[in-house]
Each structure stands twice: as structure tokens, then as C-alpha cells.
Length: 165
Image 1 (spheres, rainbow, N blue to C red):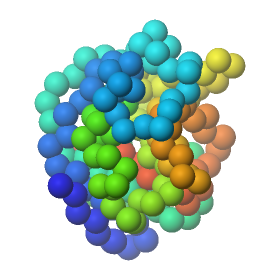
Image 2: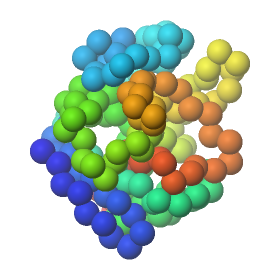
Image 3: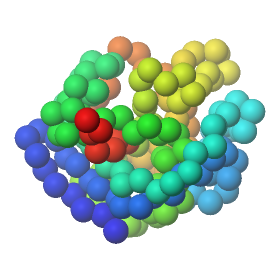
């Protein structure tokens, strides 16, 4: 179902044939979560319908990086941010329960950050720009929204797909 490799300073875990989930509420219902941020609904996290399975990767750089630096770091791994990332993050969480996640991702938060695509960014109750993510630290497994404040620490894994030339 998945493979994990370590190239350069990145950890790459791969998941073949992940189907998207096109509504936040369906993702919450079928995902393997302990809970979710109550503000996440179909109205506050509107998703554009997409179809087709993708081979996905979760990539962690194990160091502090700048807010947009991960895009170039993904390229160095022959990857790019996943297109329609929120839908595929929800699909991944429905397909892979926590006990089936690679040990390399233990305590890593999983984020669907797709820069340049307005449909993958949302706003929280305070109207701040956010991305959908899964909080997996300290025994939690919760669907949430994250505000990026200039940098990502070493506990983030980015949802990616193979680089398209």
C-alpha cells in the first residue's frame, strides 16, 4: 500500500491509487480521525469536485523551512505540491488508518498546502488564510486548519505528487 524512502534530507512515503473525496463532511465521516475542528463544514471548506486516483507522496524535510521553500525542495525530490490537495488528503485519510501509516510519519502533521491555487486555501473563524491538515502530534489524529506564519518546522509532511514536466 505504501513505501517509504529517504533521499537526501527528505523522507518520502508513497501511497498508490488514492481516490479524492470531494466534500469536507464526507471526508470527516469516512476519515480515520479522533475529531475535527468544528468550523470545518462544506460551506467553510468548499471543495471543487475532482475525479481520478493519484499516486500520492507525503514528504517531510526534517528541518525548519520557509513558507514557500517546500515547493523547491519537492522539486529536488522530483515531486510537486499535489493538485487539488484537500480532496486527496481527505481521500488518503479515508484509505489509510493511523495504524497503517509508515513509522517514518509518526507524530508528523500532514498538510494539503498547494500554493497558487486559491481553491486549496480557506479561512478560519478569524478570517486568516489556512490550509487543511491532519494534526497527528501528541497522540491526536484530528482534521484541522493551519495558518502558516512564515515557516514550517520539522514536524510537517507535505502532500505531493510526481513532478509533471
